Length: 129
Figure (cartoon, rainbow, N blue to C red):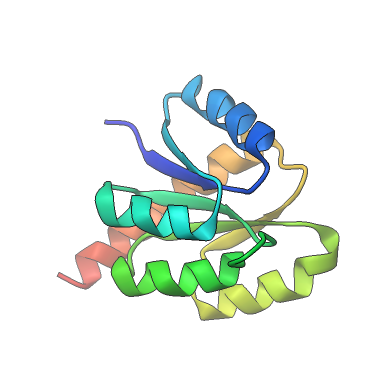
């Protein structure tokens, strides 16, 4: 069974390209182009890990994360950020975001973080049964 990854970014081309790169590596990918769309996907679908842009119009990655965490606290979130938002991303980690990556993301590093986040999610679920 492959990991179900939700990619959330307002840049459609980026999401589509990254989805293709992950699917080639045997991940099942669901996409969303906004925080609200991501929240709906989490409510409707089984998601293991979320890869989400920090800066999005209307609802930021942090705001979206807070809502998702209330729905499914075990879902691991990897935040994508630019250099300018690095301090905010670190603050997000204190809130429970699993990790962050600086754009442009290297696919090998992302795959490694996805696998680590999934292991963390499994451990979280076992502790909270």
